[in-house]
Length: 366
Image (cartoon, rainbow, N blue to C red; front, top):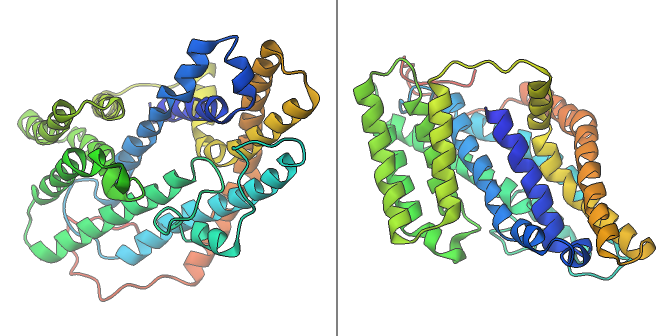
């Protein structure tokens, strides 16, 4: 189910950027105005799928039972950075080169200004949005936000563990996450000035966290009902205060993850093989699609007549090329870098302060 959601959301993000940035979509819009208009505007909310899934999987790996405590927060944060940043930086450098090449064939707003050393360093630290540097590639903001949200989750668990000590307080973390969802949806998510910070997006992320905890089959129905009620109140209150389609989608995705978390399903067959593969390469597609689309846009602008049918075909070419590039990037860049960073992490282990006393309620990444 997660792979299905990731695969579908990744395709919508690619098509959204193709429709939003142009210039092929400027011509194709004459042929399919409603479709191009929807892709260029509403399809962007597909990123909520990744936010909810991110919270769902973070809860699974960091605190599967919802108990406070994490004895190695620095190690967990480093592992997340090592997973996200190296392929992101590689894709950023490819985007810089793609912008230079595309500028030889066309002049368009989608082409970034030549990147500076400070700008690239900010990208490498996943701080470009916070420090006010423009993104080199579309979607770069999401990688930084994902890292911020994960750090927030780790620190909440760690501080919760410090607060309760050896006591077993099963409702502490659900309460803290619910409070974070409420603060996010009722304030931060209503202020666009906060969209470079994780608090703006924690409402969706927190829905995913609560969906994992509520989907635990070992819980009795009363406990599940309380967990769902806790998170439903701020979610519905936020929608009543100001309806946002992106938050409505996040609620729907969280509900789907909860339901499928409590139902045993199979994913066999050729169709699921394709879905699982698209899910596997979704992060690589997310990283590499913009420079690919930029180059295809430039080529069709320079060498192909500006007829709606031909430019619409160019969008399909860019879409297919993005998927092919995602496979290559995943197999030859993302996965090798992951293995290198894993070996480096094992050799130069990030050490933390003296760990908390071992507790059966705490979950370690080891």
